[in-house]
Image (cartoon, rainbow, N blue to C red; front, top):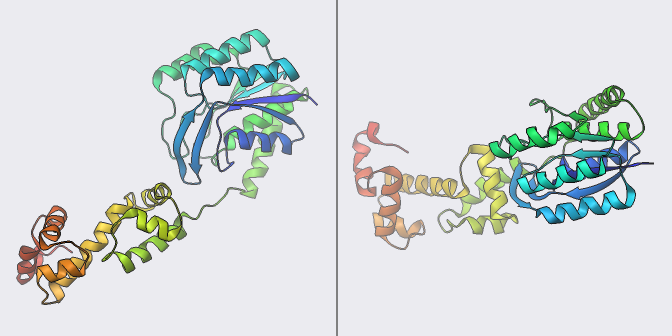
Length: 300
């Protein structure tokens, strides 16, 4: 059994990256050895944060594997720095593996750019000429499938298949995986509904995002990622919107004074409520209430 070296970033959900490479290569009976270029903080909704490893650490990982087990097939994925390109080009020219498969990671699953133009140019001019195959991602494919296809090609090449045979078998593999629909499902929709319920219950007493994150037992970062995906708004925007609706309802349906409404809705003073209301509605609570005589001026 010849090992296959995969050089790429991590994916916390295992849908792509080093985790998916190991899974695919092992599933096909190969043996994966690895070098990580970037560590991502990632959910099923997308990447939250990158931690790119220094080029000397990437070099150390690759050279340790090359010197020891001498893989003759290398699969390359996420590269985010010119220094790492320098390392890869140097190592590939020195050790000359039989096959190099490159699966460019240009965009995240959400369409966020992961490479700048200069780095993309360096890759085209310096790395791609050293590759046996460059895998082009189908934008309509499931997240990670192009990556898994490249790993499958690398595995079949390690067995002695020709590039054409390896690609045919790899396509059969990813087709079967796509039919199985093995994607991990997160709790985003469920969490969004729970968040809205919590805001309805507590918006008069709590307007802090961290309060709701703690209540739902998630990080504020993940909560923000969920609301952005669902309605393209931050949690704070949703909380303030619901609180604004509460204030407007009290102004139009009760005889409470503005000061009484302020205290009922958790504001420290009438001035605090007026500032908040005017910022979001463009008029003061008093003017808003007076405009009830003309319904066309009311904007709930």
